[in-house]
Structures are given as C-alpha cells and as structure tokens.
Length: 437
Length: 163
Image (cartoon, rainbow over all chains, first blue to last red; front, side, top):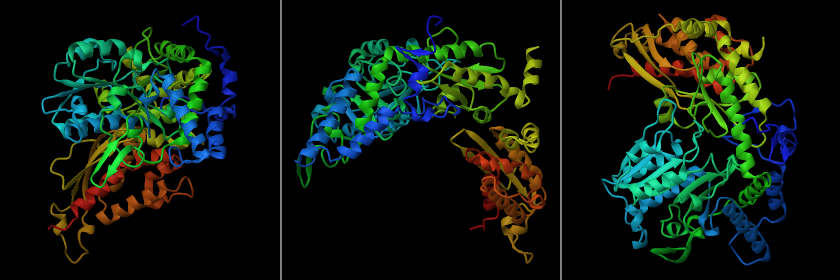
C-alpha cells in the first residue's frame, strides 16, 4: 500500500481527472463518498448521450431509413464495446433496465421454464420441488428476493451460506450447502456492505465439482465498475451489473449470459422486436440478445454507457482497482485506532474493495450520516438493501463510505476525521471510555 | 444556531437517552407496529384508554373520541430523532382524550411538513416544538413521525365501532 501514490490513478493525477466531472466543479462541494450507490458522470459520458440525442436519435431495429441504420449501428456498437469490457461475446450482453431487472430476467426465465412455457431446449432450467437454490447471507436484496420468488414458484428450497461476525462467508461454508440438488448458486463478486471480494473462479470450480447441475449467477454490480472483469475466464453462467454505478447513465443495466444459455432461456418480458414468427396463438423468439429486449430500448443510455466504458478503459481497470482499494485500506488502518467504531468486513491488512462500512457504538447510523452530512461528507446510511447481513452482524444499519476513480485521500480522511467527532457530539464518548477503562 | 444544533437540540439528545415510555404495556386496548424500511427504525406503540371497551362508549358526551389515553408505552429501536420523538410523545399525550391526541398529532405533522417555515405554537405542541428543526431535513421527517403515526393507528383501532 505504501507504494501506491494516492494522488494518482494510473497515468493521471486524480485532481486532473476530477476536472472531467461537472459535479466537482465547485471545489467547496461536499466529499461525495456514495459512489457504490450511484457514481458521478464525466463530461464525456454526458456529452455522448446528448450528442446521440441531438444528432442520431431514431428508432433502432425498426424501419429501413438510413437514420435508423446509423442509430442501430451506434446501439449495437455500444453493446460490442460493453461486451469486450467484461469478456463477453456481442450476443452475450442483454440490455436491461438495471442489474435488478437483469437478475429478475434470469429468475423469471427459470420460473417460466419450470412452468412448462418453453421447449426441450430449456430443460436445464426446469426446477422441481426438492431442488435447491443457494445464496449467501450477504446478498443485496436484488440478488435474494428474485430467488425467494423462484423458490416459491417452483417448490425449490432456498439455502443461505452463513456469514461470520464480520459479515464474511467462506468457500467451506459454501461447500457445505452444495449438492446434486443445487440448481442455482447466486452471489456477489464484491459485497456492497463488507467490501469482501469473492474468489469467483474458485467458487465456480467448487460448484462444478459439488453441484454439477447448478447455474452460477454473479451479481457484478460492485465489481465491473471497479476492477478488471472477464466473465468468460471466470466461467460464470450469468452475471448482472448496472450503468449508473460505472460512470454511466441510469435506466440501463446488463445481463450477461453464456450464449448457449441465453438462447435457451425463456424471455421473461415479451413483445415487439423479440420475435421471429408470430401467429394469433403463438410466437417464436429470436436468439439472444434480442429475444430479451422487448419494446423500446434505452438507446441513448447504451451509447453513453459505452462512452463510460471507454473512459474507464483509458484509465485502466487495474489502476482503478489499485486506487480505490488503497483508499479503503487507508481508511481501515486509520479507523483501527478510533474507539467505538467497528469496521464491518475484512479487517486491516485483508483485501477489500474500495468501500468501508462501519457501526458506531451508541449512535444510530442515521445520526452518524446526518453528522457527516453536516461535516461535508456524503455517505450512505441504512441497511444498504442487505437486511439479512445486518441481522447477522447484530445491527440494524451501518454507515458506508465508497470510492470511485475521482475519490481523493483527502475526502476519505474527512470521513475518518468526522467519524472521530461523532460520539462526542451525541454524548456517548464518555460512557465508552468508562467501559474500556 | 448551526444546522446540526438546530436539528439535534439538547432536549432531543436528552430525550433520546431518557426514552420515556420504553416498556412493555400488558393488555393494551390497541397496539401498532410501525417500520421505516429505509433505515430499519421500528417501534411498537401500545395504549390503554380510560375505558377498556372505549369503542362502545357512545354516551351523550360525544362518542369514542372522548375516551382518555390512560397509558402509552412503546418498544423500539432507531435513531436519536425517532427515539426522542417517541419519548416526547409519551410525555405529551398522557391523560389527553383521543380527540385531543389526534389534534396534537395533526399539529406535529403540520410542523414537520413546514420545511422550516414559520414558528411552531408552543401552546399546542409543548416540548415537541424541539422537533421543528427536523422539518428542514426531508429525509428525517419519517424518523420523527414514526411513533406518532403508530399512535394514530392505535387510536383508529381502539375507537373503531365494533362490528
């Protein structure tokens, strides 16, 4: 860590890079440490979306005009750019509303297959009573509730890999939940609360060995925007991520799936432009990705998301990961000497992604967040859509600071410094001192 | 007064630790659980009215609204604003009639929706005026309302005519 220059990200000075972001034009603006919820966007991304809307707007994949051709080319080029970024083929990237939508498309597709709504090509997606779906206790609700619903629809049983007192799960814990009956294993590559980085390739190898009938579904929301990703190399079956966490627009997400799987998965949403031949009582669907893209698509968002990918690639994802992880490690190191502040997730010295969630003894997270807000530090407070994890940690809510490419060491220091004042303000510092004494 | 001191007045910080009414009330006439999913704050408010079968007290003095709140107690977990608010509510409603309590709740709600405008009426709201500062923080209004909304539901329950 000491070798990492926190003022630089790859070849650029962070201060220079911040000039790309209109949100930071006002230097007195608060420290924005909530990028894990939604990231700020550089001018290049905003301009790309506006340029498409001003000069190229036309209905993609519909009609025969030259304008439609240009718009469609931009739309599909964007798909190819995003696909290359995550180690996917062009046909393996499906546009969705967001990552939640992408995960639902998988779960609902399995439900449709289980209800007999697809042909023999979808037989590997059929779940029956007694089958099992495995998730971890650390999952975001978006990667939990769709599986609860799938279990309820099919009679399958949902199993949870337990976490330890820091909110971490292990390969051994996962192995204990796997069997021939396991049909789905769904987990996040990076936890949005603990910052734990899952050993995805090891998980896939374990699942293939112990649960050969299982599909591996990866929630990549907190990994794709922050570290190099190659879904094909990882060997996962499906993955999901969203645009607005990776310097891109709202209203667009991605479902990745291996082509042979996507071609067989029943489409959860149906309608125009997903079909080949339609009669009054029957429809046949296109191969992936278009079989899943019913109705008008988020075209300007796709074009802008591709620009966000180019922006991140220009920095280099290795550099992005190194910068953000060094910032988080510094926070964890500094917090170790702060009484009454409990760091959730990997402890000092252990690898973690660029986010840190804490509990402050004697002060509710909402009050912590309010204090930090007043101190000019924007963080996320609450259960971060991970109630089972918080329950396992024995807290209702935590306070999280998260970094992105533009985050500075000074901003993270302001987070730590303000945390150091919280307990005094709320009048709990003395009590704790007494307990320690 | 700076923003943060305006929000967290000393009386609020004190009330959040005092937690008046934080206990189990046996055999309540009504109870209601209220949950704020955005932050996980939750509270169960229980009340006893002056007449156990308050819903039937339709005498000529004006119906169920005239029953008195004999006891209010709550159990919950949440931020300092929500806990202080429950504590303050407990002090304020003791001995009030159902109709008076409803007026108090309405006045409290109106103050919290004011976005910092105007001056709250201490005659009506008593110590609850300390929460005026919360009205400037849109994301915290729900915290302050939590116990009050739960009481409102309790009163509706307790005074609902028997079917």
